[in-house]
Image 1 (tube, rainbow, N blue to C red):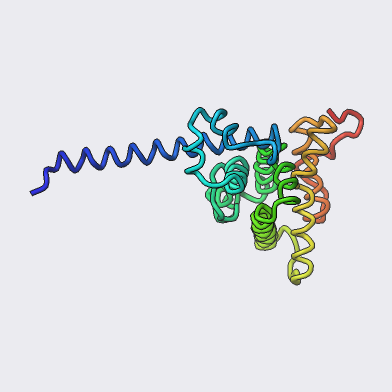
Image 2: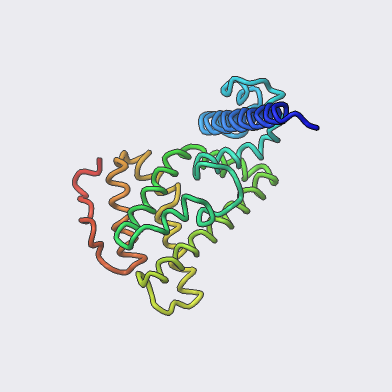
Length: 232
């Protein structure tokens, strides 16, 4: 008859090993994100990632090829965890959808602004790598497809709340999703925050107002249009 104490020890050891493996994986992805943002995809080696993470190169190799690390590092930095689920399917997306009408757009904007901040530099490296590596481009195309699905889902949520529409046809729905995607894109964050020096508060206020005007089709009731006199 199996010793219950032995079974408990084995279960504990198995759980501990799984936790250690997950922690190591997270460290590797954090290190990969830092290296790719700092040196670009081509300028980053697995040895660089290993050094940044404080692990061996062999350990990094076990985590997958460099292109897979790039995608996983971006997903973890942007959404808090890796995986091919859309944001709408993740806990963070579900949480945003639970917000009331007044808090919905500001909550969505805050999440995107923070995600863009965390992935600043990494996104540019991703685009650059995709231009020269067909396999990276495949990963990017898949990511962009999920991104389009997310923004269409966001428009569906807004329409279901009565905040846009009603009765949007497919073309109108896609157009609103495209506008929303453009407004909150990593490129807008790069230009306004990184290059122009806007504070995160100003950037978020601008996004809330822009979404109200261009997506919801009304003046924002919760924010005053940002002043153009002092962009910082």
